[in-house]
Image (cartoon, rainbow, N blue to C red; front, top):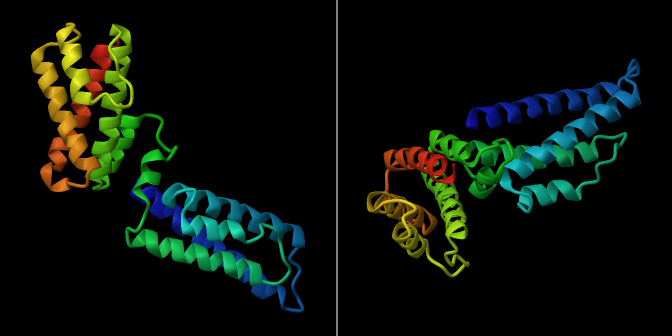
Length: 219
């Protein structure tokens, strides 16, 4: 995922340089650049940058809000474009430094499957959000199984309680319940900001285990 986003940032920077070059050439007496070509290229760039910033930093991020404040309309001078470009360059610099909103990465729609999200995050060295995503899948599955057996599972019901109740009704055995408890512990450590309590290997095994658990229990 990191490589794809990095590539996209660079592509849009290259396109920005081409747009700026058009502005410079338009000042020449020999310029024959059609205004409609400018309008189309610049508007397409604006929309692409807005989408990328929202995906990487979040819909409500400062970069996105500042970028959205600038009118999307075309202007004959380069003042509006330069304002847009400055924000884009700041966002790119923050991305290059790793200053992204991990919540946005988790919810990005580039992945159709949540466990694939977790795998991609882990591969990108984001073990904490990867564990949170896998843990969310686990809890959602547990709640579905509780619904199946008529077991209480409102927001106040703890995962450990639901897990124990499912073992009692025979949904799975004690060994599986212990495994669920171990996965839940990793998820809780990740959610409460204690990454030192688990390793990347722990998360890798958790993702694989949760995938099997979902397949076996919901089939």
